Length: 310
Image (cartoon, rainbow, N blue to C red):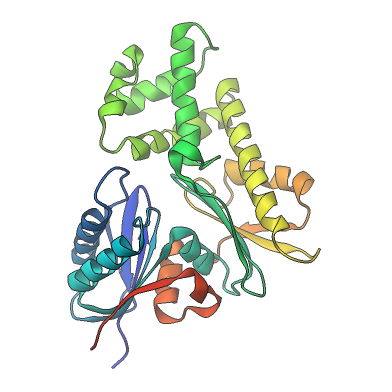
């Protein structure tokens, strides 16, 4: 009987689960800062497994997580909890940038720039040397991410309200998305348990307003493209040699053919000509499923946090 493998992509907006037996994907809430890493993630895995119709014991599960547990003890506790939820013989855990890379670049060489709610680059050289750029979370990094763009857009709305900034179509967009209460300030957003995802969601409106010609929104998305280009350039510089480096883009912000990709490509041509920007071959979820079967060049970037007898 073929092994049953499970891949999990645990981002900040959603956690997705898929098995090797079907293309059906189960979805649950994503990582939430300030919660209980172990209990919250295990609970999300349980809900996603039910949604995916997962039954029967699992041989290997690989989790790529945006919010990794803090410390080896918490990592083991999460692995044991996930093993219990899925009846899994082995649990592998890594940062979601690793599963993004594994899904995006079949050869395991090059740079992935993953831009969704957060933003991170991972460079992997031919000898397995890895270099991370950004991915430090919404408070201290994630430059150019959906959260960064959404936050800048909402800040521009407040600046105009104060008389400190130019009029912008983002004001109407914010009312449409969040309600007219934004006219008195972003207070309800502060109280939201999903504030990071809520703010990141506004990035869609910022890019739409920029595409429609709003000058304020355009400046925001151009700054985001500059930030992402800086991150990609740093990642490419970590790859040895002077030849071209495949740079796979993935995540909701960098959808193939989108406005953000065009802005990034223009900037990379000036900053790092070695970068060969291309769409990701596959998703982070596909990468997680790949690493559940074969760790390939990513072995040093994964933690086998639980291995039981089966």
